[in-house]
Image 1 (tube, one colour):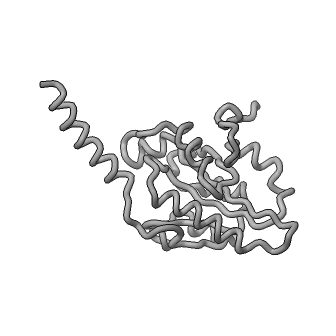
Image 2 (cartoon, one colour):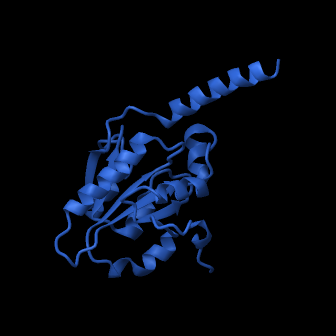
Image 3 (cartoon, helix red, strand yellow):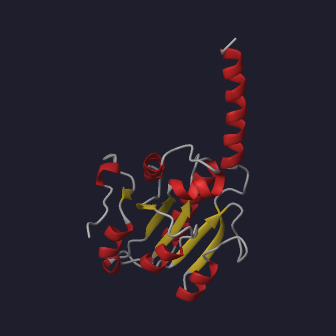
Length: 191
């Protein structure tokens, strides 16, 4: 079986490395330091997403136990199929969203994540990554709003919520506003 790679997705200007879950799994056990994971569709990305990623990275750095310790923040970016299930269609394609996320300060690794059998959680990835921390911001804060809660409890992954700016922005509302404005613009432009 051929391993999926995303080498051609990396922009080459620093930032987080974009790689497959398979690639990451090959060297996970050699990593020294706390590992944190956050995830999302990020479509379109907004300030709440950015502050959540930066804040998660800051929290993770505060968990650094020694100079030899190298905390890593891994950001899973859900695929287009996830977005079709959640809101009917992606606005930005998966590759572009991964590239944008890779440029956010504090992002060490970006993993393009594919929905598994209609399951929109990232439980299967958490089982492979085995992070120390799972970060969620916005409107994800308890067992009822975080589908990965039980998996985190089972694997002894500490869940840290209320990461980033309070829920002010909504990708769905941004898209709705855009489509409304675009419709008005298109109507005015066609007369």
